Amino acid sequence: MIARLPRLFTVRLLAALLLACVGLQAGAPLTAPLERTHGSAFSASTHEVALAGQRRAETVRIAPEVPPLVPVAVTLVAITVLALTGQPAPRPHSTGPPARDEIARRPSPRAPPLA
Picture 1 (cartoon, rainbow, N blue to C red):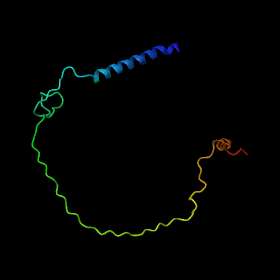
Picture 2: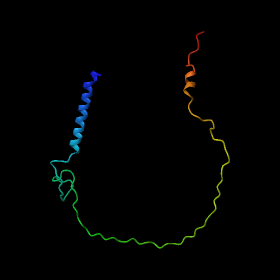
Picture 3: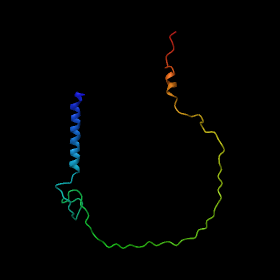
Picture 4: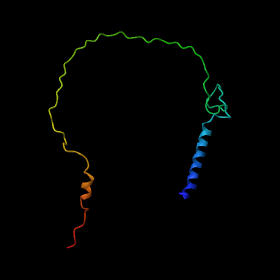
């Protein structure tokens, strides 16, 4: 137990270091504030990707034309259901693998005795 303590301390130290790195990565950026710029998304003035500015454009919505309803004659057809009579299952005695006891009792294969 005492020999495992240095390894346990090392693992805990690495876990704490990993959590600290994840925490620093998840934090807010300090150097590159978010600036809205116009222009190419891949220009030299942007850090990663430019955000599109809010541009208001007049949109004209056209109502779609509804096609006229066509009357449809519906006829009902009687469907008879045929039930299959009691047929045996394809494999009526399928159960599963043999029990472990049966496998354990079988003798192992051997070569024939020397004559």
